[in-house]
Image 1 (spheres, rainbow, N blue to C red):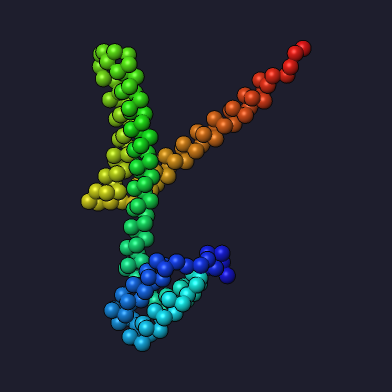
Image 2 (image 1 turned 45 degrees about the vertical axis):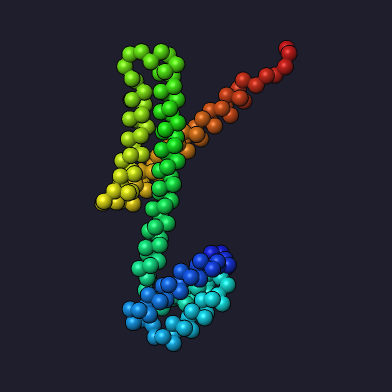
Length: 172
């Protein structure tokens, strides 16, 4: 038995399975007796393996596909909000610097705002727009995340190397 199948289930997971079973019964895949039996077993299920047994001989229900899509969109939306917050913070800091230096000349923070917000705006449109493409948005967000992680790792390695070479060794 895998680790995931031995996890205990919550009431929400039981209710989701019951909705799926009702959908299958409505489409004629389950009789009313089978539906009642499976609902009773769903309420008494304690692990994911128990729930998986109840749906093993049924195709994937549209409600489960819809729910998985909704969860994925919500996850991407949260990640885009995090990126937008970082971009907004950097934009506000650059506007603050521009104001602190007298706000003279061209509004150069517009370049910072455009460079930091354009990827977020593009991916938000790709996620929330009329022709949403989750795969493309996920790939872009993941690529930016991995780029940030690799930069952080390079900085960490450099700092460790620098500390090792320039450590105070005491008086001569």
